[in-house]
Length: 267
Image 1: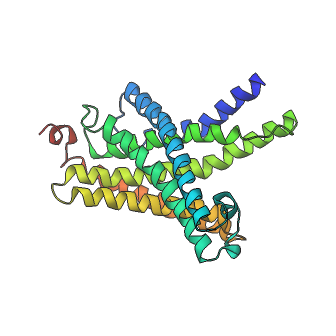
Image 2: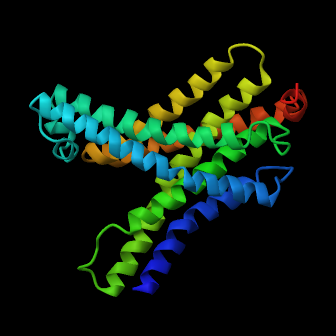
Image 3: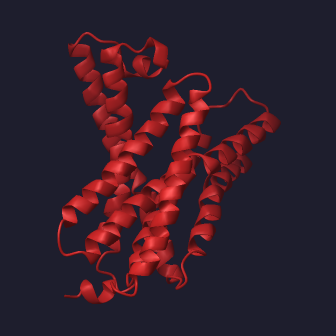
């Protein structure tokens, strides 16, 4: 049993570590390892308030559904796209876009806003995106471990290991990648808000809106849609986000010579 727990932890963290090494190579001026580890840790720790917030909001939504004489949230979320009437669809959208996607993107953003902005280690616009990605990887490392710990007591050891490997790889190319891309997008607009003197709140709102919308659509599609759309739409979202993030990285590289954050944030 101890072996399985260790396996879950390793396979849960591994996708985040692989993506972390990839993104850090994008930074021509690497950040201090201590700061990277601290942001990763705070990103992982942010799963705790997110979990309690989501559980609380689920309770409120379930209570509202009961008063409206609608099925319980769990039953509605089990329905496929073809079974969703307008009322059920509204509930599913509230759950995936507001309760899940918004809460997760908000707390990853707050990690950087509270722990990184104003730090001496934040000295160029590209750093904002990278730190957002690191926070996202810390968050998703814990999320991956929790997914692996879902009940599978009836499986043999061999099937349990195979299941864990499949889940880890699937989340590596799916959910973990999605979290990094969404957080990088928020980081891009956050960097712009720190560099510009006007419409700062609008930049943050734009980044959060894009991240929440695509994150929510991804979750909604893989859990609700049927047939080829169940794979095609999430894949399209990842490709679109990857293209956006690549473009945003290049734009921020050009901004670093005209926007020194360490100087601006001290003013």
